[in-house]
Image (cartoon, rainbow, N blue to C red; front, side, top):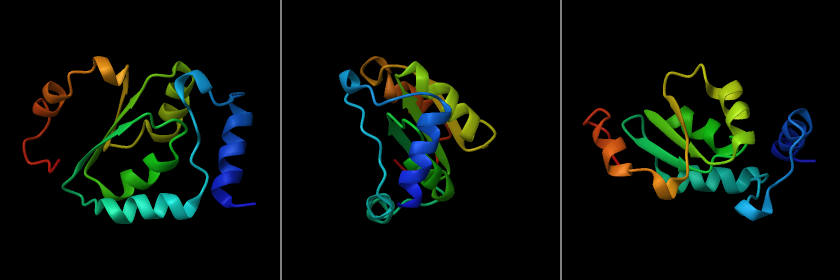
Length: 118
C-alpha cells in the first residue's frame, strides 16, 4: 500500500469519517499526483496559496513546505478539527471554515501582506 493511501485510511479511521459524496469529496491518495501538482504550480516562499477544500490536508502539508502562506478554505465541519490538529501550530497556515462561494476573496487577499504573489 502507498504511504499516502495508508495515512489517509489512518486519518479516516481515527476521526471516523468517510467521504461526503454530496460535497463531491474525494481524497487524494496518489503521491505522484501530489508531486505533479506541486511541481507544476512552481510555488515559492513568496506565494500566498489559497487551497479550496483541503479535506484531510494531504496537499496542504506539501503547500506549507513551499509557500509563504496557505489560506485553507474548508466547508465540511468534520475536516476542521483534523486540519487544526495537523497544521494549527504552523505560522504560515490559516484556516477559514466557510463556503468558498460566500467568501469575499479579494477582500481577504487585500487584508494580507501586499508582497504576496498570487
